[in-house]
Image (cartoon, rainbow, N blue to C red):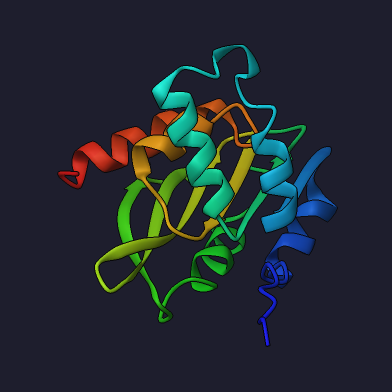
Length: 173
């Protein structure tokens, strides 16, 4: 019997953020949708080895979950809102890889990874800016360099790719 993996239910904190946001983008892709979408990545570059490696990684992912909240004014969300999002991943199978904070602001970046037998099986990025909050959750076997190349696709903000590359560099990957 094949088990069905469901993407996680959004945390209650996300509903609070969505109610405060001027604009919300939600992208939820399960394994079947990812396999379908992989066919369209860099279609002109089918011979490109990097492009093929990204496609292969995407085919093996279990899901991609992206939420982007844009606000009218700076700091429309509170430090408590952000703490609620962080708490969702603390004390579980997820380990913090990067924590970046700006003193006196809710802004910052968090990167959590899920390791299973020394293999990265999940990545969660929380990027908080004064007028924008982005959440990216990727489940399945991950090559962090290829994930950074996915930014700008599947609703993953381009800025998240830069943060992922920076996090990997700081962690000594």
